Length: 234
Image 1 (cartoon, rainbow, N blue to C red):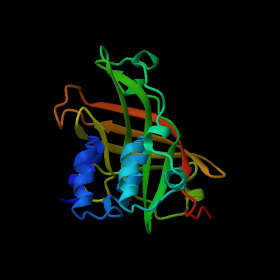
Image 2: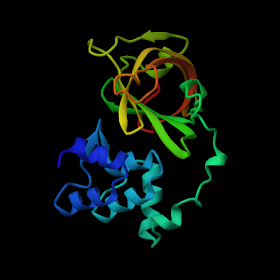
Image 3: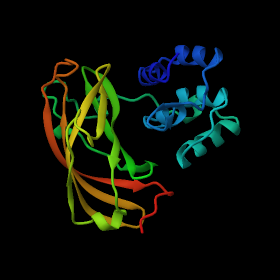
């Protein structure tokens, strides 16, 4: 079982297959994608059941949030204790008839430093409904090269090449059983305050690449990101 296969199983919420892989020797602390472990990836969508499976096979917390959840497991709670009550599709916007990413609400995301000069951004999307099913997803942006400190970028705009040109941002969003490419054209650095940074990101959602039934869209949106504690801002 490869890391990519495990990642797909996590996204598909195939709990039995993931547990089988861990039982057969897959390392619960292995990187599944871009310096992210399985338990952390599951945390992006609050998949407590998947997190509990990884923890049961020795996964260690990699963020403050996963540490909090692991503490709950160690104190005897299960994923059932952490899950919210069954959700009602009527509580969320229904995008079935007129889907568009312009209708997405981006929640506070996270800016992480993966290695020297390279960063990643996780942009969780507020839940929405498609064909009576509640969807929870996030835009994942990796390999963002920033050569200077964050404060030096405030007020500046950086343009990025598009895949497969050198220097492109490796972006995707999981929707309708597919990892759909997201191409970032530019990032404008607006504000930096304490542990939060505000960016304006212009990106193209390539839904036609996987043929999921939606047309490609370009979106310019302002997002707020929590800065990972180990990033030096000055």
